[in-house]
Amino acid sequence: MIGIVNYGIGNLRSVEKAFHAVDSEAEVSSDEGRLAECDGLVLPGVGAFGDGMDGLRSSGLDRIVKRAAEDGRPILGLCLGMQLLFEGSDEFGAHSGLGLLRGRVRRFPDTVRVVPHTGWNSVTPARANPLFEGLDASPYFYFVHSYHVESDDDADVIGTTEYDGVVFPSICARGSLFGAQFHPEKSHTAGLRMLANFAKVVNGR
Amino acid sequence: MDLALNPRMLAKRIIPCLDVDNGRVVKGLRFLSLVDAGDPVEQADRYNREGADELVFLDITASSSRREIVMHMVRDVADRVFIPFTVGGGIRTVDDIGAILGSGADKISINTAAIATPSLITDGARRYGSQAIVVAIDARAREDAGGWEVFTHGGRQRAGLDAIDWARQAESLGAGEILLTSMDADGTRDGYDIRLTRAVSDAVRIPVIASGGAGSIDHLREAFEDGGASAVLAASIFHFGEIGIADAKRELAASGIVVRPADRVHE
Image 1 (cartoon, rainbow over the protein chains, first blue to last red):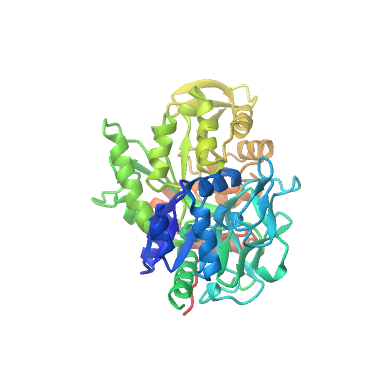
Image 2: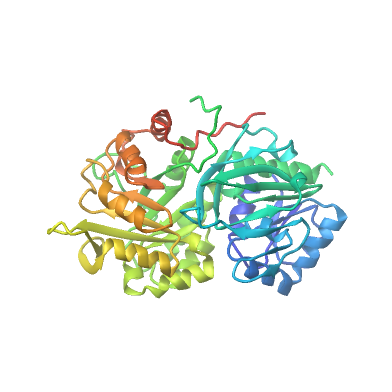
């Protein structure tokens, strides 16, 4: 069972239905006990970094995510959920994150004319990963974000995306930790395939 | 389509628009005697498979149970269609916004209500993020040719606002995108109002969706290349099957516009 961590932020229904569409068991939950029993977790999220971390901490679910990481249970952060896996962000003041991956979250520079980065863009894999199984060489996914990750460890960056002259890590992995800046649950066939690939990682353990 | 060399660039989006009345898709039925082409999920699924990048549902239901009908439709679509979609029509309050987003829509669009209550943009963006708030602007060229004037209530009332000024203001209030409809071009099939599209695209730093007047694939290309639009919205040319979205994308790609190719998933 994949637990979709409900910390009061974002559209979780789509994530759950997307897993169901690829015949994977997944459920939205805010219950610590229930999530602690799940074989893998998805950390979704839209909105501001500070609000997201506040939501995680006040619900106590930050501990559940950290424990899953320690146990080596697979975790997939989506959009803001990916950003929260990192050490911190400068969005509306400095905020600390979960610190499971090394790096920070920064706003697109002023040289980027249109923000948020909204729409379909391609991901170029930087290294092989089970999440890419069965996908095009540079598949398209749906993005919507104004901030992006700056990783301090290149080995964690498994795919990059370019927007208006800025190349940023659009998908990261370190062991059983995964993060995607885009929304696979809104990325049609390619996105569903990636979620199925994550489910396979979860169930293959 | 041979797109072995995917350019590393944000793709231009093609967005079909579906008018919905009482939970049924209605546009097109006036002209074609199709009895049942109106199931929103079926229509959405069809466009999804053809390669639409997003969908917009414009609700025109005039009924006291409107909200329930719309939320039911939104849930049905969200459960089965895995591309982003926007719902517009009849949204007046932050609670309305929350109800639709909570049912599974990715974005809402507001037009008349945003002008009547500009704080709705800010409050919605603060609670749900700018990416979820699309401000729709219906504009018509002034008769003295001095810019474009904003209209509300489906184009029946002058808002007393300049389209460029209002677009800028909507952006600063927290809008994540502008859905820009030229009332002069709408329904003509003579092409988008490129001057209007360009003027608004140049004035703001959020994506602009061009709407009104599409009659050919060339018109889509013009809106991107000359109008600076991030996305194009069209209704009738897609509904009547005159232009397939896959064909449009193939032709646009051939003329050098970056579009998302049809998905290919390999075993």
